[in-house]
Length: 155
Image (cartoon, rainbow, N blue to C red; front, side, top):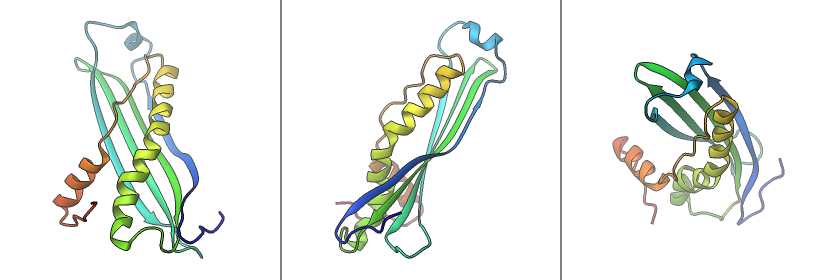
């Protein structure tokens, strides 16, 4: 990857790291049934510095897990991790704003791409597309890091 210029924030790559779609009761589960299935969706975000010559290079990973059930029967389980390699050039972001950038803004930018992959996977599994609602990554950030005692100012 190219080194990030001073004063710039640059997305070097976006990529699917892992995708799993389990359809344990197909084709019976594809026949439909009474009412919409119950959906349980979980979202996770991790960020780390990528080792190497560019200290401003980071990887942000967005994890999505969706489980659909109807009654006691699992219809499908979809899990994916979506990565973004982002460079933060020297002086581009104040040190106290780097953590929120990596845990709020980069996931916000990547989410529509990850959402589309998950929607495509559910269609390929024989179901209507799973269209996740927009996510308030700032609220997730504050909730997560307030619990961990690592709350940082995002203003």
